Image 1 (tube, rainbow, N blue to C red):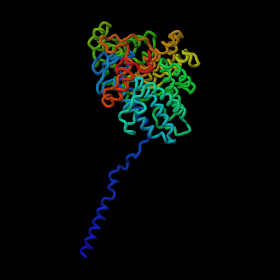
Image 2: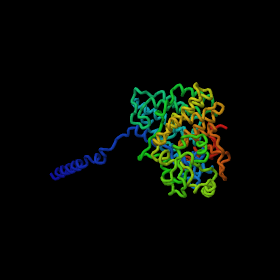
Image 3: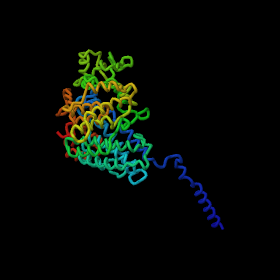
Image 4: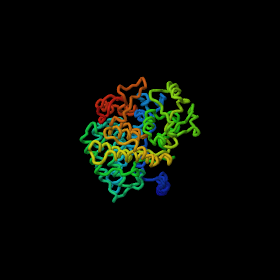
Amino acid sequence: MKKILLSISTIALLLGASSCEKGFDELNINPTAATALNPVFTFNNALINSTFPGSTLVFEHPIVQQMFSPNSGVLAGGNFNIDNRGPTGPNAGLWQRYYRDVVRYLIDVQNQTKADPNRSNLYNMTRIWRSYISMVLTDSYGDVPYSEAGLGFIGANISPKYDTQESIYNDILKELTEATAALDDKKATEAGEVLYGGNITKWKRLGYSLMLRAGMRLVKVNPTLAQSTVQKAVAGGLMQGNADNAFIRNNANYTNPVGATLNSTEAANYYLTGNFVDYLKTTKDPRLGSIAVRYVGAKSGPEQTAARANRDPSIQIGMPLGFDNGTIPAQATKDGLASFYDYTQLDRTRMGSQFAPTFFVTYAQTQLLLAEAAQRGWTTGNPADFYNAGITAHMQQLGEYDATSLVPAAAITTYLQANPYVAARGLELINTQYWVASYLNGPEVFANFRRSGFPALKPNPYPGKEIKGDFIRRLSYPDLEISVNLAKVTEAITRQGPDNLDTRVWWDKQ
């Protein structure tokens, strides 16, 4: 009897314990947490993080002589023609933002949507944007991880191989061709994406405009492929106006990284170059009034106040190249200025604002590339018409920064009449205008300068340069990447050439 009672007691105890444990697993689950993330949100994260890092102020802008700092230390780079490495050196800024983050997001979205017919438009939008991101990376560094990039989490590949730039471009052309053709406005259009709100027509125009850019990049290394690519892009349908521009409207939640840099620690350290300002003044370009400001009489950063701000194009004075913070004060005195803080800067309240939009691919750029294609005989149309349309579009585009930055129609007409297209100087005129129209898109203006050789800039005369040539030709690989993927980086260096600023990327043929 005791045994029976003991058994009943034991069973009751076990049943009681079991009932107490019931629901424990549910207690550890947040009932309001999302169980899955809509891939369009990850795609938006990639788009927003595609804005250019502040490090482009250290290399890309000084190399093409639009804006630079006379200061050394963390700001040394294109201003002195020297490399600036380190665990988080400015040569790594673009790599960390695009390769480490954006590519990873895009690969994740592709992995989630590739086999889902209901998300085919999102899948193909992602292919187009990855082509853009990959162009920026390979144009900047040369050979980079591509076919195995972004697979650390999905495929546990933490040491991706480096693909040759030629193979990357071949695949980019394939991806743009297939993805753009596959976009279908009869399927889910992904209204939640932040670039075009799911407008398939605009995405198609972006895809073909990127194809035009990629084709023109190949003019020196493979003119036959360049021509056929341009013709395919034109036949597909390019951007038709500024409404098709690919850009991000930055705000207080997602600030413009370049603008944020210029409005914080480096507010008094960056100046428009004398070459850039003088070109705009010589041609009486009304865009100077939209871009520049001079704090007249300022003797220090704190004296760069609104009361001193003068945006009159006629009084702008760009900072000459070839000086550092030890030698520029004497030059400022020679130029009749109160100090070097008196030189012209990018207007940080408008175009250089931390809330200013970031433009990636524009109608203005596309029209200027069309002008060159027409000048080369690769497409029909009058190069002068494309040239004028590109300049006009950029002057109108400036209104996106601030209402006061918009160039009036009458001023545009006056400028075009005073600076007509001349066929004998076609390539120079077109690509010099591309230089202006791509201002603040550091990677693109750097790439097109190397591709075209224009504008015809004189080498930066700063003494003690590290480069052997006249201009920096690429960015060096980041130290952090070398430390975690040394074997694959070494293979790329052996194949491509020394990991320095003189080595040319594949399409930058001499």
